[in-house]
Image (cartoon, rainbow, N blue to C red; front, top):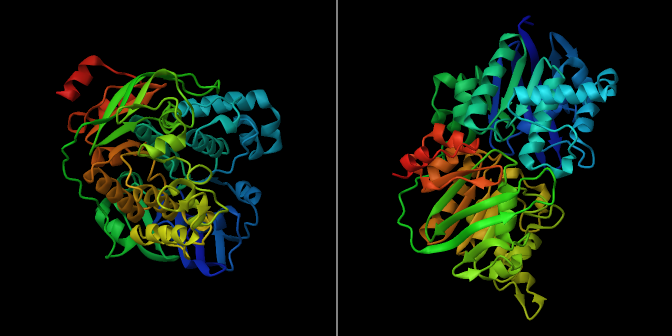
Length: 511
């Protein structure tokens, strides 16, 4: 055993009913190495990380830590060894504060002094550009802010192996650069980092080496800086799956959605209130709104979808004032919505895919005279599954049994097959693999080409630049002017995300 090896996995096998998640996986991570673990949703990455972190026990194989075979039988044991993990799906208690959640993962002597812990949380979160208030309850945080809690908790633990699962999805470009500089500094000091991301350019710029999983097995290894993103994508999905989306220029039609001077006061004292938001969206175009999580994206989605009713300002859809209408009434006018949170808002985990189709698509002939037409419901669900390549065991599969990417494809497909006039999609490809992202992007482009107006709220800047004809940014509930994408540099967009709406910059971008 080389003294440079921090972690070595040998022949890891993990079986679940009807599925072998890990099939003889070998992995070696050196001290001070930034090592990427890549693969499609369902490739076995999450299971392998849970094995390392002690959440599940392998059915076969060995874990060797700093040259010694160990049994990691719990997260507490993993933290004791020096392994910290930031999960893609958060392990937080919503009824506890930020500080209380972080304290749960710390030794008693560190968790006991709450005043010192609160100060430490502020120092670490501000240093990494992810400001957090230790007093806030997790239930009041957006999905992106919850991820920040996970990252800060892991950093406070001072782990010698840091596992990061999609850590940059809530950061501006400037904050990503700062985080990467810090990760390189940590690695230089001997900390090993396992980095899981679907943003292959990030992997190429940051990681020393990469291991790729496909269908539970290692499909290849590479040095990301020495190969192209296409080469890495092919290792992930094989040669038959498209890995990019062709997006031709569009000629938008007439204005469909008009928002004028929209203001909305958030009931959450820590939430972002909307302040004088104005924009228009035309038929047959995709408009993007960027922003760091917690700056009003969720509030804007709720105001547009009808989850909250607004009276200050005006929202018009196809000439109809809809500020006081319910979500169902807005749907009847042609609006469809894809929320950020898949499980709970986008779908009910315990219900079948067929039942989840009924929740938003009942107007598609699924209900007649108040009676559910079950055969039609199942046929509609099967059509979504087939058209969007959803991997599942049929329309009776519980929504919660699908991987994140497959569930997202199902939700997008359920809305797309209703031929909406307007689609509001929030973070549609957050945490999904390259193959699923391509399928979702193609669905959005098809909708645009059919005349649908698409409002894309996303923190994935590559996605926004690829798909959108115009884009802007939200900061503290204020929206920058929307400008043609070709005229907005990444630096300008980053400043807009930070709240600097310079008039000269906006004019230059719009020119």
